[in-house]
Image (tube, rainbow, N blue to C red; front, side, top):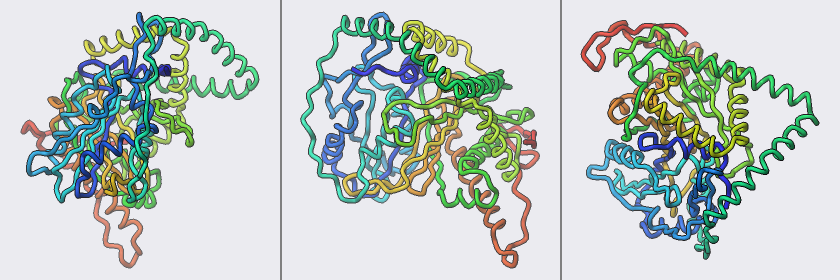
Length: 498
């Protein structure tokens, strides 16, 4: 059996009937659809590479230790790989609705924590695989690694035959308790080894401590309550989902013309979409910023293990800026300052300290904290924005190319809308998750992301065009000073500042 890390167990303990802690994706393939039995055979052939896919979670009696991964003696692939189809006409709204419904259902904790659906009925004979994996198994990067393992890098289908598998005997409750006590006794030894290692490199230890303290101060300053917004508050169990699309080439054109990073450009487009959403809803933008949780990977480049290696920072997105270029520059300044703040170092340090906590108290604290947030929703974070680099080469299932890879991000209490950004083979996809009842405008939000990128691309092409061919530049499109919101009232587009 394998012990779950403190961070992995965090994602398990905070889940309840409303906060679903699975990540997911919708992978669209060219037609014709792969026969379902062939897809099942493909997954079966890759199971030896996907250890967690045949393991389930066992909780230690009394919470004396962190949960453990054990082989599922009743593993049945037919339960996890399922077959469905879109109702006619099978267009994008039908796919989005199905994705939202599937992601509204929690995974069965008595089985391995993943499911996949083969979806037929897309236009032009295309088909899709909707995948759902619990966040305690993977983070965003290891999730894309799993997809790369499941699929083939060439059109030639893999010929690997399923290998015989015998699950390890399931441990008894007594064995789990004994193991938990052994882990508790080993904790002081681990602390002593860490202290000794620090004394061998005192300058490095001091520098890391200073960075962590600076990061904690920065992180603490961002946890003050936000001004109330309509996109923040309690959530229900049901989700809406939609996707926006762009290309890496277009985003790089913007970066080359105006500086910054690819991440700055995509975050700026998301910020612009939030600006228009809030103006349309009549939210005041006097404070000028939207606070977003930004997960950050701390995974080494050569680390492909299937666990969570992330920390988090809190960014203030300049939603009060209406001009696309001014907004891009403001996002660049914010993201650069965020990197200098060492929030990621602080977050990683806090996560590391959790490893020394008594498991019973750790689990109780998480459960109690989650219950408190349900009763009194947090008002420090407005949204979540995560950007995951995917493979920049085509992947195939049974010789059919995956043409789109669309991400899903879970929501937590107090956060009614979140955005996941994923790049794949020259394409960039934005998966927008929202509370079903509170945020019905997810499709309009996605279209606004696309138009924000289109505006920046147009400005970039004008910037880089030869002087003789360059047309007279028009002013960047701004939000009109007065426009109607969704409730039919006139609202002001206020807060035009960085």
